[in-house]
Length: 236
Image 1 (cartoon, rainbow, N blue to C red):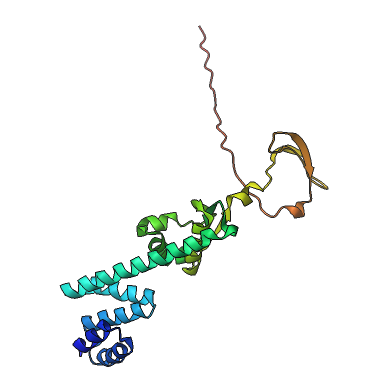
Image 2: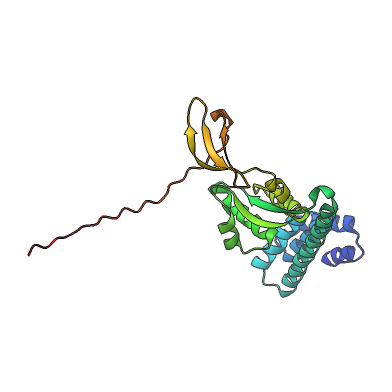
């Protein structure tokens, strides 16, 4: 019956192949050839993740050289198809005027219990070593991961989000529109705080605001080095 399955795949008669594999799966569920053809059926049905899992499991568990060779070919086909699909999506996204210019891809913190699975998905999407991928995923705070064309960052960001990896992307032009004032000191703290500051052109001025307007704050400590000098005087 395996020959009939192979012949059905050769003529792209996937309906017949599926019917035959259903019988074979009941009769010989552990047969590596049956598993291989199930992987191929998942592949042609557009179920890439399921096919990928089957091919990788076969490479780990079987010693049949022919099955291993075809499993590797299956993984190569999946990788080539995913790459072509991604490149087409990037080209389409880049052509959108809304995605013009450079931008930033930012990784958001991820819970420790979800990091192992997230690192595996991150490594797969970004073509990284699993260990390196886990080190890159932040546990606290944001991490700037990549800069590039907004269209490309959007596609990678969407793939990461689909894999439950918290991430966002923002255009450089949007960052440049944010006004930044360098605070010199507080002139008053209540009832309304007033700060003496300088703008982007290094022009001095002051700003008065309400504490309710403060949505985020960053706390830090400055290192203070205390030096104790001991003077010893000798008496003659």
